[in-house]
Length: 240
Image 1 (tube, rainbow, N blue to C red):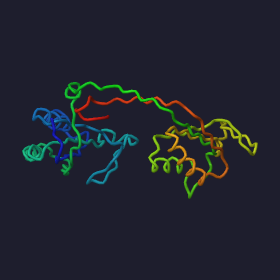
Image 2: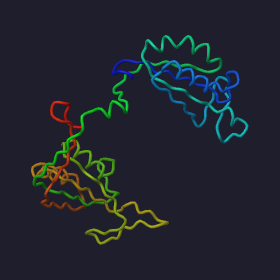
Image 3: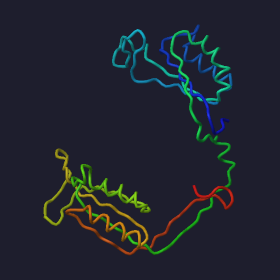
Image 4: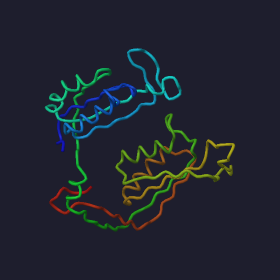
């Protein structure tokens, strides 16, 4: 199992039709890595590509269908990569080998995860307020969609959370109907942003939104908020 810290990422670029004896070269490389105890390897086939021969290979070109590019990638310690590199150099007779420095941030196997302490479910209940903001999808704020700008502003204010709902039919104070049709996609469908947080936070949010909102509607309701939190037992690492 790889540990957190510096490591090496190796990428091997091959053609699908390149062979090593009686089997495809990519299969020989995968088997080699498996038997050498590499932590894990992935074989992918890009949609198209070209190599030093400067010929395009893609599924749309029947003549080159069997010559599509493939890529083998794996990550392991610097020591193991250095030991394997001379052998890989001899094995890859036609292709490209790339080595990059990388950092493993987290590596957990399913077995390790199953051995962790069970999560504790905690219930928090308190009075709160719900803020709902009604606006149009086409409304703008400094060059971006107003609903997007509002959500970003709320996030900067550390509001607990916000959800944007896109309507399919509606009308506002001006009496114009906004509707999404099969052949006509309205560019100004109704949008509602829903926010739940403490009364103090909601008051701050209202002040910020009012400064950004042109035509629109702000509604505030008293609600009972029940928050369910899954966390590790005390002394084992905190919330997840």
